[in-house]
Length: 148
Image 1 (cartoon, rainbow, N blue to C red):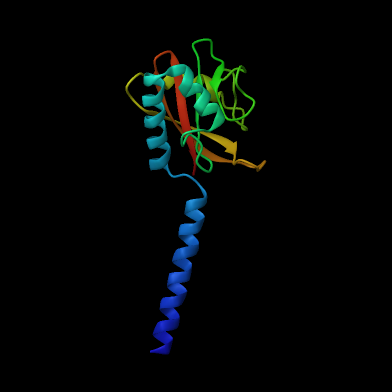
Image 2 (image 1 turned 30 degrees about the vertical axis):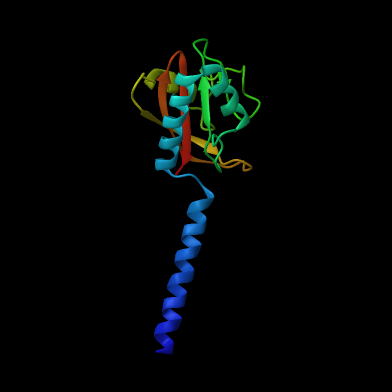
């Protein structure tokens, strides 16, 4: 009986450690849901939505998840760091992949595409695999990425 209780305790502890680690980062489902919410916000009021994305307001910043957008000129129109006004279209990942070009190439109004690339987690320097869900809404190309 005592042995069984100890085993149950160990399993419960390991399960809580695993879920705590998972809760530290956003999931693919959460990234997709945030992008869908971002699309609705852009459709409702594009200028306000882009400001909310940049400021991380109204649930548009959750752990390592956030939307970013680029305009028809290829420049960031929303991003939670200092990238607004800089070129999204010319952005390359940490392995040299033309990330921005691919984001623009796959973006379609009304559908989600995926772009895989290498990027450091926030606050880190070592690049890891990341996937962005990408779509087009109005004249904006928007994405939300999650780390694998």
